[in-house]
Amino acid sequence: MDLKPGIDHAGHMTFTGLYVPLVTPFTADGDLAADALEALAHEVLDAGAAGLVALGTTGEPATLTAAEQVRVIDICASVCRERAAALIVGAGSNTTLDSARALTALDPRATAALAVVPYYLRPSEAGVVEHFRTLAAASPVPLLIYHIPYRTALPLSADTLLRLAELPNIAGFKYTAGGIDDTTIAFMSRVPGHTSVLAGDDLYAAPLLALGASGAILACANVAPAAYADLIAAWRRGELESGRELGNRLAPLAAALFTEPNPVVVKAVLAAQGRIPTPAVRLPLLPASEGSLSAASAAIAAAQVTTGFVRAG
Image (cartoon, rainbow, N blue to C red; front, side, top):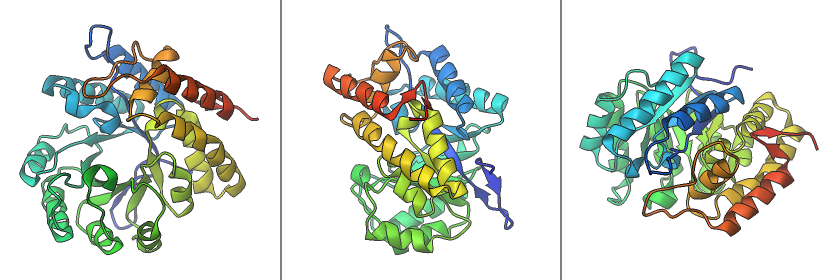
């Protein structure tokens, strides 16, 4: 089974498989650790990811300078071009004009752009539809809508999600609703076939895949890329027992990696494994506590995950 972006019979770009929202590694001096980022990008692709996400929430984009953001995209784009992998780039903000400008200036090597539902301003659901209608028209690449109500304070109804799915140039969603609720069930039962739904909640990835999600964008896949690639492949192949067993095995790991704000525990684990040079994050985030790192390390051992690969248990 081909788990990567494709084109359906109607010409829509579709996304399947695992897309890893890379952390942004920092050096001991607080600078961007470019070599570590490049190595991590290759590592997750080696482990079976279909592509990368640059400047997702996990990459702390709001704390990066404009020059650092450009460098992150350049590194990820170069790796994706070399590896024939997809590159999704986080772009825009909570305002329509600013987001449209960012999309217009998007690196031409991007496969798709990821744009969040407007946060803080709390527009009406009709306003959200018009926001994305404008962005989709401005974007030179297909748009994935990042639906994450616990960050935006803006839950959307199933009807609104379905209206968004029908907009031209909307490829799909990073769906991060914080659980599997009645809206999720209603949406997933009616989502058009040309719309890609990528699970964005690490803890709820397996049940959303069971409901028909085509893939996932998961912060935990920085730590265990092969395991999450295998999880998605199992559900896509209809290997229910394998998918259920692996999902249950990974659930405690996801919980442990999110005991503090993303990505602080993920970076602590990667640094402890020697995969990035430091666990540093930028304010207002603080580094993970020793307790959180210990708990995550124990969860990795219990899940039988080593450097991204799950061993048979």
